[in-house]
Amino acid sequence: MFEVIQIGDKTLPIRFGMNALRLYCKEQNVSLNEISKLGSNISLDEACCLILCGLKDGARKAKKEISFTIDDVADALDDDFSLLEKAMEIFAESFNTKTEGNSKEAAKRLKKK
Image (cartoon, rainbow, N blue to C red; front, side, top):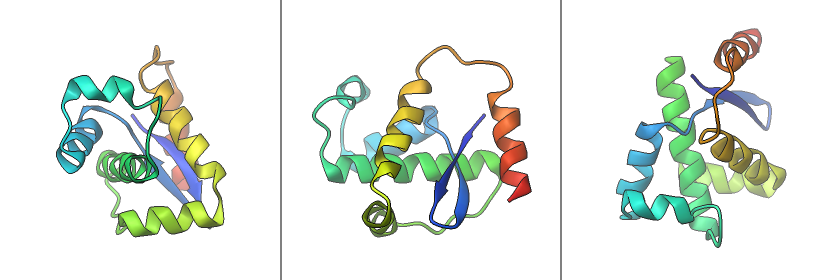
């Protein structure tokens, strides 16, 4: 299951599953227990890293290639800072009760682009 997010003229899959969290913990050298603190007092570097991990995991699940770097994420935020809020909403929703059909709808939207 994944969602999609608009970054510039690209519609990209994004997912904050266990693999994205694993990537984030490895990249930021934090424990899984520290993930619960991400919603409050997150640094810009941590936010960019989290978004990148979500994009990488979304691409993996959608079987798509992605060549984004953390610098690309920061550049995308320069162009549209609301991307941060959108990504964090998807992150927060990933821990709420999943609703059926979200991943299917997201896959359809991605295929249309």
